[in-house]
Structures are given as structure tokens and as C-alpha cells.
Length: 101
Image (tube, rainbow, N blue to C red; front, side, top):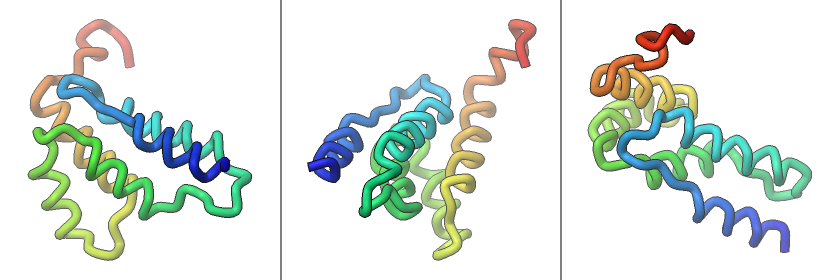
């Protein structure tokens, strides 16, 4: 039953257009941590699939290019970096503008 609950949690993951990519990654990592003890863990492929499915359409181009460039070596870190770069290009780094780091 825990595997079913993990899949239910995965289906609830969401990211809105103006959310930072880190919000999506944090949701995925929280699920991974919550179900860490299961025999069927959330593996890298599962996490990559979630990012590709749940990221807003705005990121589809950069995600496709990153996936094509990296091939089988694609990691969550690659996707997170690509999305974060795209976010900074589009929206700037508002936290730095407010004096945060």
C-alpha cells in the first residue's frame, strides 16, 4: 500500500508558471524522503519523468534540449540547472534584488 501512496503523492506534484524550479524539485525530494524505506524507491528515472511531466510548457524547449544533449547520462541536477537558468533569464533573480542571497 505504501507504493500506491507514493504514486498518489507523485500525481499531486505541481509547478505553476511563475514558481521557481526549486519548488518542483523540493516536492519531488520530499516524496523521496517520505518513502525512503520502501523496497521500490523513487529512482532517478522516476524523478526525471516527474520533472518532464510536471514542468510548465514554458520549460519544454530547454528540457528537450537538455535531454537530447545529455542522453542516457541525464540527471535531475541537469534538469534543475537548465530550468533555473531559464527562470533567471525570464524573471531575473528577485531575491538578490530584495537583498537576499
